[in-house]
Amino acid sequence: MESGTIASWKIKEGDSYRAGDVLCEVETDKATVSFEAQDDGILAKILVSGGKEIKVGEPIMVTVDNLKDVPAFQSFVPGGSAPTASKSDVAETVAPSSPPPSSSASTNISTTAPAPASSAPSSGGRVIASPLAWTLAKDKGINLTSMPISGSGPGGRIIAADVKEFVPPMVHQVSDLSTTPITTATPVSSKISPTATISKPTSVPAQTTAGIGGYTDYPLSESAQLMAAQLTASKQTVPHYYLTVDICLDKLVELRSTLNKALGNNSSGSLGTKSSITLNDLLIKAAAVSMKSCPTANASWLGHAVRVYDSVDVNLVMGNGDSLYAPVIRNVGGKGLVSISDEIASALVQIQEKTVSSEAFSAVGTVTIMNLGMYGIKSCAPIIRQPQAVALALGAAENRIVPNDDDKEGAEIYKTSVMLTATLSCDHRVVDGAVGAQWLSAFKAAIENPATLLL
Image (cartoon, rainbow, N blue to C red; front, side):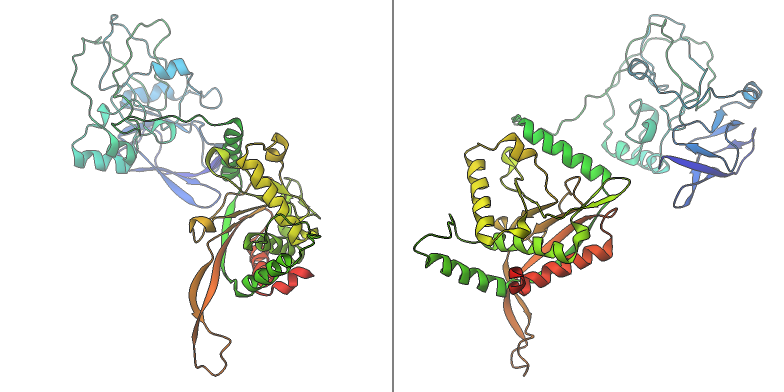
């Protein structure tokens, strides 16, 4: 979420609360949730009244430890949105329970601006952690004040995963600190004054994923890094959903056998084919034919409009690892199977010989197809390649026992058929569930009745 509305406050200014108490109700775009206190305190000032919308990260209240500090914040007004700590400020934030040694007895704490409610532990000895983290820490006998300065949760909040992975640091001796009293509120920034001199806190070295036996780093090519960045952005921004269907390939296998026999008998070579027609060629053709029945899937999201394309241009995923490419085959719907087969074979040779041009690599079609059948994968949910609206993954063709609908007399109720599982990833902004189902239905019909591929 980016913003929310304070529905109502459950406590008043000056009221005390304990960890787990509900401070206020927050309305999101989907539900109303309770904002629970993470530790004990006193509500000194309400900065956002009920019914007002506020952005995530802006301060909504000021809390203190002692009741006598409440009057000091009655006229407090935040100077805008919550400040963002600089890298130097974050590096010098002090954990309250394990303060580092200092050559100076005086440490100035800034109390001029509010910070998010999920900030790091304050100098008052309080720790921002989820209720589950408190429970797990208690069960494991861990003092949360001995945790690192910030957890992995929002705003540095310590969550359950941090408690499970926490390794207590070795005991070390700390020099005496100043006895000067310091009073701060949880949402108030606790940063070391630029003039203070203080050593960095001791932290536990980060754990690595490498094994004891060492590791090897393999550099990535520029093209591999580019594809990784594109897929990451697509997965984060495109609302994916997935539809899966099982398809019978019996008639398509028969058609492939017939066509390859015809090509083999063509001794004159007038067809100009370089390789035999594969099931993959037929499946790609079927995908293009399906776009005629459901053209909305052959589209892109433009933000202000949906652009539907006339030509079906297929990005076919080939290779693997650092040699992963998705060359585009233009106008698949208007080409014959022999032409499609030759283009695929030519692209495969370029990948094997590492002669793929940058233009061929960066070209984007209107749909991406990947066939994982050679690896024995039954199904896969592919990531959509922007700005496309769909991506199709094809599983392995395998023999399965299915109901025998051809036997009208019921002598054999089951039969063995060649089956394939196809999964369509859809961008819900362009292709809703009904349209996606319509496309998969057309794809299934084209494969199980391959004569339609000639239309």
